[in-house]
Image 1 (cartoon, rainbow, N blue to C red):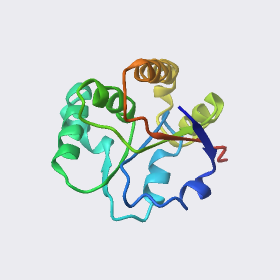
Image 2 (image 1 turned 180 degrees about the vertical axis):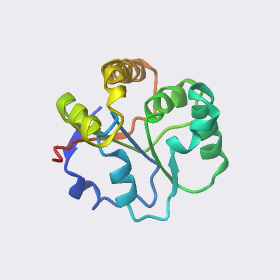
Image 3 (image 1 turned 120 degrees about the vertical axis):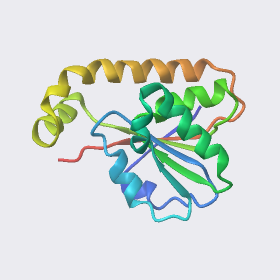
Length: 157
């Protein structure tokens, strides 16, 4: 699967009106920032809005809402990793474009120290390790709907 490296500014120039887009990345990588920057008619889904359903069920609720819409979508959030894999497993969700935001571990820790709940830092490494496993699992699945994959190395300060 070809991977394109771009900046946030370059990604924002892409015409996504006729595409289903998924934005993934570790905590504090800039997913919500990028999501909010897109000015599009696509139906927007922020997976954090589904947290009240619980960790397991929230992913299925987002997938159900996506299936129920006839519009093109842009989806953002931590659940995106699991949705990517489960979408292929259940043959129900295939984004046209996956935008993966990447930051250094130190950058993530610094952001949590300065702006978020510092107590959660101890869980971040395990969280990211599970995301890497999910991507690995996803790439091994038989999938005839490979998305365009864009990586952004987000070095915000």
